[in-house]
Image (tube, rainbow, N blue to C red):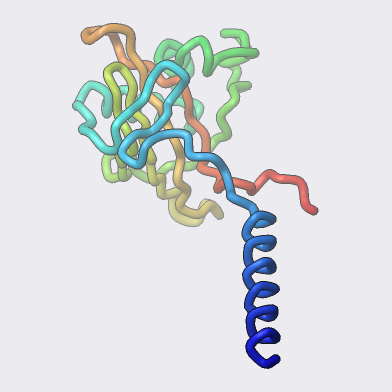
Length: 172
């Protein structure tokens, strides 16, 4: 009789574990192999990489021009049509662009971290430190550089402050 109760209890426990595992949230589906980053449907980048001087120079020029709202004509030329979408050149030159101002202390010492790279595409994390007494805190920005062809000019296709996943999700 005791053996029957133990076996029945074990079966109930196994059934409960199986039920709970089948109800668990599996989380988001993987989008790329662990050693690859899906940049777009047609481009898969490898983690890391190098930031050639020309690409670094474009990133610095763009950041300095847009965040400080100086030389906005140069920033327009360094941005891709996708980044400029919805904004006319006249609006951009008046400072009405999709990038918020930020008082950068020194771009020469800002950290540029290559997250992933592929031919013609570099994903960067940029740590920007604000000027003293500005009321801002150091902020990480995500920036994507692209170019057409091996010798084409680098352009900025994405530039926004980092937002952790779910930060803009609706509350439950």
